[in-house]
Image (cartoon, rainbow, N blue to C red; front, top):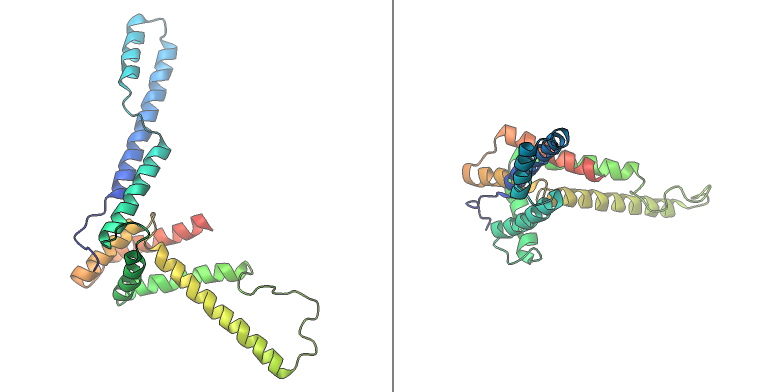
Length: 215
């Protein structure tokens, strides 16, 4: 059972902390420039020293990313009532929830579209068939049954690749960059029976960005 009452916060927390980090870094750079310019002014130097002693933000950007990644994993476990990230409840829950939300035509369309794009990317990178194009004149002298068997094998490998591409997109829905949107979609579908079109558009863009960034 998926916990629709759970509020996923990791993404909002991460964005807020990164924004604060960026502001603090800019403030520090500005203060350093002021200090260099007015280093003969004792009062100004003392004031700058007091600011430095306050250390308004001590975390680095990577610290924030690491903390929020841990929070994401904890929250993923929470919605599936799992003990840890390796709990089989997560894999089983993902399979079950994908089946449930795909009754929504918008979600199904996004998954199918992204799966096809991912498949085309694999195909264009010659990942479809191992050893494709090897051997000059390969296939010469083959009988009809051999050619049919080879064609069947290629077709089976193609179907396996398409299945794997769809599986990757399903998993991407629950990845760290996308899960905060997926959770909202799941909650709307399970609780309201529909998903807001703007949210579906945001989900599509997030999956596409994730695919592009990791390609």
